[in-house]
Structures are given as C-alpha cells and as structure tokens.
Amino acid sequence: MFEIDFKKPIHIYFIGIGGISMSGLAEILLNEGFQISGSDTGQSPLTRKLASMNATIYYGQSVSHLDDTVDLVVYTAAIHEDNPEWIRMKELGLPSLSRAELLGQMMKNYEMPIAVSGTHGKTTTTSMISQVLLSSDLDPTLSIGGILKAINGNIRIGKSPYFVTEACEYTNSFLKFFPKVGIILNVEEDHMDFFHDIEEIRQSFHQFAALIPADGTLIINEEIENLSSITNGLTCNILTYGFTENCDYYASDISYDSLGLASYTLIRKNKAPLSVSLGVPGRHNISNSLAAFALSDLLALKEEKTCQALLDFKGTDRRFEYKGEIGGITIIDDYAHHPTEITATLTAAANYPHKTLWCIFQPHTYTRTKAFLTDFAQALSLADKVILADIYAARETDTLGISSADLQKELLKLGKECYHFPTFDEIENFLLEKCINGDLLITMGAGDIVKVGENLLGL
Image (cartoon, rainbow, N blue to C red; front, side, top):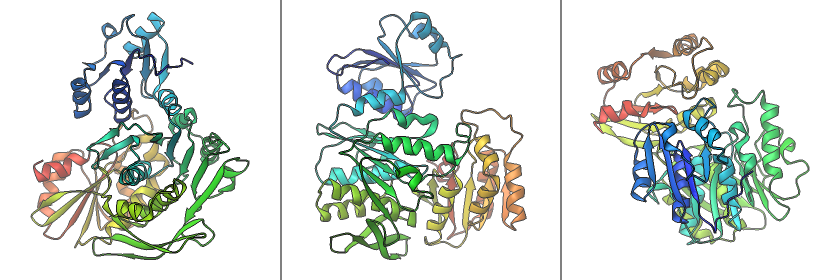
C-alpha cells in the first residue's frame, strides 16, 4: 500500500471529491500544504469551498483530468473499474488509496484518534462528542459525516493530539483505521448488498474493536445482542453504557419536556449521580450521550463543561432538523433510512407537539427495501399517516423487482393510512391539500426527500 509522508506534501487527485467525507479529507490535506485536484458530478457548497482554497475541481469525469503530475489517486467505494478516471489511473500506473485507507493513514498522525462506529447514530454521536471536545478547549481535528452547526461545516482542523471521525462498516472500510479509542453504538443488519448475515456483521465489528491497542479503550453499548462475540479476546480497556445497572454508565429517572427533549440521572461507578439534560430529543440520543460521557470521563474532562455541551448540542443537518413552519404546520427533516432509525425518530416525534404526525418516507436502495420490507412497514406505522416516494436508487439499479408500492401494501395490511406518489410535485400538492394547522410533517430518508419540505417552505 502507498504510504503518505505527511511531512512531504504531494499532488493528490480525488475521484468523487464532492462527497462529504472526501471533501473533508481534501480540506485537511490542503491545510497541510498538499496540492489537491479532483472531480465530481456537479457543483456544491463543498466543492466551491475547496475551490476557494485553491483546489482544482473538475465537473464531470474525463481521462483528460489525470496526467503524470498526479502522485496519488484517492477513490470511494462508489467508483467502479469502468470509470474513465479509474481506467486512466491504471494506464498511467498511478498509485491509489481508497478513502478509508487515506483516513486510516491520517489517524496515525494523531496521538488520540477516536473512531465512532455503529449501524446507526454515527454522525449524531460524532457531532455530540465534537461539541464536548470543543467546549473543553481541546482544539480537536474533526471529520464528521454531516454539518455541525458549531463549526458551520463537517471538518475542523485543530492542532492538538485529538482526531475524531466516523467509522463506517460498509465494505469493511473501518478495518483500515487505527483508533486509540473506538466507540460501537449498535450492531444490526444493514448493507446486505455487502454482508451475508448478522454474524458476518458482528465479526466485522469484532475485527474493528481488535484494532484498538492494549492501552486504548473500547466504549460499547451494552444492549448490543450477543455482545461477547464482539468483546471476546480484546486486550484493550472496555467501558459499557446503556440503561441497566450492570453498565459502567447508565441513565435512570428519564423524563421528557414538552418538545421531547430528555433529562436523566447519569449513574457511574465510583462517582456521584449527575443530572444531565439534552438539547436533542429521543431515547436514542440519551444512549448517544452516554457514550459521549464515557469518553469525557476517559479524557478527564470537567463534568460541568460536558453537561453544558450536551445541552447546547442541537443536532446536525438532517437529524430531526427543524426546517420551518408554514400555515401552522411544522416541518422536520430526518436522515433515517433503516427500520431502527425510523422507529427512534418517530418515537421521539411522539413527544413533540402535534395534531397529526405525517411521515413522508423515501426508501433508500432496492436491496435495503427488499431485505427489511415488513420491518419498514412496522416502523413507519408509528406515524399517523404515511406518504411514500419512489425508491432512491443511490448506487444500485432496479434488478430486484421491488418498489414503494410493495411497501405501501404492507402498511395497508397493518391498517395504516398510506399513500404513494411517484413525483415530489404530487406529494407536495397532496400535503398542501391535506395538512392542517398543528400537524407535524417529517420528511425522512437518505436520498433527496428533504426537497419536499424545503419546497413547501419556499427555501
């Protein structure tokens, strides 16, 4: 594998530079004096920011973008061997690294690399932890999979030993990392276009945990099923969190205010109970905050600053994000695209003021929709009324014979009022006709369904 010497900047080309992770890595390297160029399908705020930092950005992909002045090519899992720039890279014999390999090499440059993994909640928990470290003036370098309001972006470049990043299990990319502290939020079936079954997923998370050195720490959710399959044989320190007394960190006396924001008593071994209040809703965010507090104690941070950071944290873009209000109708947007995430979001929404809870859901990928069809229906049934958009294909093509109409049938079997419209215009017109003052409308999914709410609000 090509090894970067971060003291000797080179010219690196990114295929797909506009992605939230790729653009962040490019920004860090620009700050280190590297020459950066790359391509993407179209302009975005992320590519424009890179261009303002003197990166060379191409829109569209072409063999003409690569020549022998490039020292290294970085690519994502979405790039296939028929990509023209991939073909050109091979013709020129240029060395290459995957996005995950590059991120792993970056982690080696920090004394305290912290990697947040799990099937769900990575972006929110990474952001929550980032807020905690920032409030404690630790000057961390941050690589987040969403936009954190505290830094007005997804990347922050610090000058301290602390580096915080998300660690995704898809294609086993997190096995290229070098964490000193690893966090595992949950382990469930997902990405079944890559993994065969839940046992293979557990094995991947076990391998990730095994990357943590003996003087490092694993912070892990005690509620994970068959937890020992992940923790057996580890040499590192292990801290557990959850909602039962056998955890190192657990929440008791949980309550919610009128907006669904949680408060609880934090119980820890050998420490006095502590009252904690959150600025985000839902039981799942209580769980996320427990992981953040375990890290805070591990780093010996002041409790009062951690508590204030958790209260100040209002979430990231597309995670129960308040978009606005029109005609007395509140519009929220959420990235949930797995049944467990949908359940968490709609359960949190139940504590939010509303007359009727509408969920406008856009399924994400054909394989996920087919694998979890009945689970999706059960989760979505927590809403009062459901509207389905067509499946967002992402990296896939429709070869499985599955559609949103199939999901609608499952919801109708459950007695749920459910509608399916092929276009966003039809969805918007239907909502304008049916929604009334006091309703709560949640656009949900990992695709572009956010546009429905934004169009209604005129954003």
